[in-house]
Structures are given as C-alpha cells and as structure tokens.
Length: 627
Image (tube, rainbow, N blue to C red; front, side):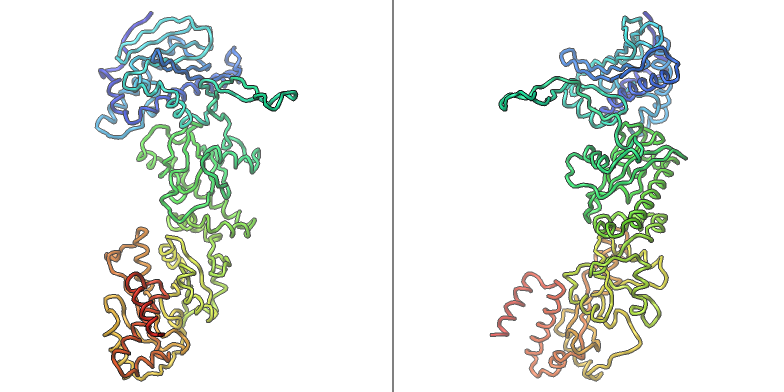
C-alpha cells in the first residue's frame, strides 16, 4: 500500500472547492458520469484500432444507491486505470488544475467552472466526506484502490477487482443525504445524462409483456424485471438528416417536451464540422405574442452531456424563442456565461445558426409558399424580432418576410411596393404604406381607405412600431402610417385640395365654440374640409407620438420621457358635413353644447375611448334624445 500527500500547496483544498461551488453541487453526478462515458468511449476507440486485447462488448454505466451504508456507487466498464495512472491523473494533473483554479478565481463570485480546470472528479467532494476509486485497467496490470477522506492525504493499494473498468464510491456527507434518495438521483440523471452515448442503468423496472394467445380475458398480463436504462444513446440530432423521417423528428420533440401537446410547425437540422463542430435540431413551435414567455426552451449539450437551457449569448437572442437541442464539443462544458459570450467559437456558432435558420425559412417559402403563409402568424414574431436585432438576418429575411393585408392576402415587401406604387404615392413622390393594428377597432378607418382603393396591411405584433421604423430606415422613400392617424384625405396627400363649405370667419367661430366644450387636455381640435359624407367628428392619434409610445412600451423608444406623457388625440371636424354646419348655426348655446358632446362621444365610441361613467352617461343621454 502507498500513502502520501496529494501534490498541492494549498492546504484543505476540498473545503474550499465545496464552499466555492456550493450552489452547483448537484453537477458532481454529471461530472462523474461524463468521466465514466469518456473512459468507455476511449476503450471503444482502442478496440476499434486494435490497441487493446479486450472485447468492447456492450458496456453499461451503472449508478447504485446504498442507503443503509450512505454510499453512492458509479460503475463503468471502460478503459480503467493502473496504479501509476491513478497517481498521475488523480493526484497530480487534477491538482495542478486545482491550484490554477483557486489562483484565478479566489476573488471571484463566478461559479460553474470546475470541469474547465480538470477538476471534474473532485466535484465528488462537494457531497462526499470520503471517496474511493477501485479501478482495473484494460491491460494486464493489477487493479488499484485509491481512498481519500477530503484532506490532502490519500492511500493507494492493490485491489482484487477482476473486471476491467472503474467504480467510484462516494461516502455521502451528512449535509448531502438528498443524494441517497432514488427520486433525486433519477431527476439528475434525466436532467444531465438523458442523451449520453453509453447506456446508463439505474435500478430495474417492471416491463409488461403481451398475453399468451391462450390466456383468459381476466388473466393478468405477464411481467418481467428489466434494467432501467434512463438514457437514449442515439438521439435524433446525432444522426444524419437522410436517416430520419418526419415522424422521427416529431417523436424526438415529444421526448424533449413530454408536456407539450402541440406539434411543432417545422424543424431545422443543424450539422456542421467546419470551422467548428455543431449538431442539433431546432423546432419552430406555435408562438404567442408574448416574447418573454417563450425563452429558455433550447437545451445546450456538449458531447451529449446537458449543460444549460439558458442559451443567451450562444444562440442569437431572437432564436431563443425556438425549442430544441444544440450540441457542440467546441462550447466549454463548465464555464461562466460571460466567458461563453466572449468566446470566439461561440460567436461563430451564433452566426452559423442565424444563417442556417434564414436559409431554411427561405427554402420553406420558395418550396411551398401557400403552407408558409398559413404558418406566418405563428412564426412572425421570431422573424420580425430577428430582422430588428440581426442585420445579416434582415438582409436574408427581406426576401421571405410577409406582410398580410386586412383581406388576408400575403405579400413580400417588394411585391407590396409594386402593387400599391401607382395609387399610394403622395405628391412628394413618397410611397405611403397604410396599416392597421386591429381590424375590429379600426374597422371604419379601414373601410374608408378601401373605398379610396387603398390597400391596408394588418401589422399586429407587439414589436410592429420598431419594425416599421427599421423598414423606413432601410427602404428608400417609404413611410408607414396607421389608418387612424389622419383623416383619409390626409393619409396620402395628393395635389388636389377640397373646398370648405364654411368661410374663414365661420371656421373661426366654430373652432372657438368647439374648444370651449371639448377637453383641451385630451384633444387638439382641427378643422378639415373632407367629403360631405365623411364622418362629422373623427378622432385620430398622430403617427409619431403613438409610435414612440408603443416603442417605449416594448423597449427602445422612450425618448424625451414620452412614456409618461398623457394620451393626446386630434379631434378632426369635417367642415363639409351637414351636422357640423348645423352645430355652427344652432341658436341656443345649450343645444349646441349637447350636439358637440354627443358627436364627440360618438367619435370616441368608434375608437373604443368611451368607458366607465362617461359611457353610462352617453347611453342615458342618447336614450333621452330619442324619447
């Protein structure tokens, strides 16, 4: 037997590691099973090239709980170690990493970097008061037994283990007895190791067999005990797209999200080996308009080991609303988020994913436009968000991003520009694109625009104000105006001007009377000569102010404290409407005031602005008028 001190100059390193990484202490199981997997795959490689005499066979990693003895066992049938290798890899190499770890992070609050310094095995001491390694190399060397109680002292002696591979025995500490509970260990195995490439056995399970043909109806189905293998060793993303059918992708989606009952709309299979390695499958689910509810659904793996489902900084932000898996050996397993975001490979991966998603969307659009249009409302939030946040994505998406009209027809931007350019170009040669945010609320304005032969887009996503601002910047001589921003004749100004029935003197008199009755803190009164059959009173909200408030509400547009400004509207009064002429000519002030209030409330009602006590009062007054 050999005894000695581990090669480290820092006293009591184990308590330091435990304290430092306490918030991440559950990752010890991931680290130990990752080591067992590496050992198994190394043996497979050696067997494949004829460098070992042993048969690879069908190795399994097993996890066992000894609740009575307060021990947790992790066993593999991998390459194993000789006593010399234990001395080298456990006592020397790992602890040179430990010293570097402590030196670099002694003043930092950063966590999750244990594996980055070769300390994966020593994460065991976060939950164990003593750790044993019993290991037998694939060579003829005798087995070795290493023991350490969490101090720099260790023992290393010969063991009588006959089968190749390694057994790690953790004597669980009193403050970590949760890791002796079957449910807890099962939870961690499913979380971190669900797709590991080597089968992981955790106990047994009862399997129901088919009934024999001669069995009676009341006879119970026969059962048998089988190994409980918790992982799928060949998940869909590790296979070639040509080897998978549509149903395989759907089944894998159900495996990833067993509580998600809606099918994904489509998938994107990622597979690249230069200039970095990356595989994965991303799914487009049906998305609501609430951006924040969608995130943290993509799972990040490194060589089939789960790392995190917080992929910001690795996946472009607009794609964090998708679901699926990304696996790359080029993403460090245990490093901080700030490290990931600064890593050069990670930035390349993000750019690749952006390009791949754009290419897939473009091919879907080209190959089956009708189907793409049907799915547009379910995927538009991702595409619009991407167009705003990633310039390269905007360039590609400009070819397939759709703009639906209120009549449910879909156009690309260039198609729509071509369709409306003759009728919707104003006197200054600017193309005016009219849009509505809500077909029901803005119905009367939409109908007026359509009566003029104008096309109206339906743009109702929560980030539409940002999107049209971006489009006005990118596209030459284009302006977006919501249909209720101005009277119809002012939305697209032509050369002709309408003549008012009222003289300037009459207009001054009318405006004076209106401003006495209409609340000036909410409405700016403006007189306009419009068609005689157009509404007498019309409420509009200036495009600039409304758009800035909307942008501020979704982030990024709160200039000049606009979010705190009260809602302001224009009250547009049609000087060519008979009712307006009647209001002007009404002799009694009381009746005139009643007509103005009633007309104003009707205009407010059409915009959904009449509520509560004011609505109750309006209804009562209306009934009184028809008695």
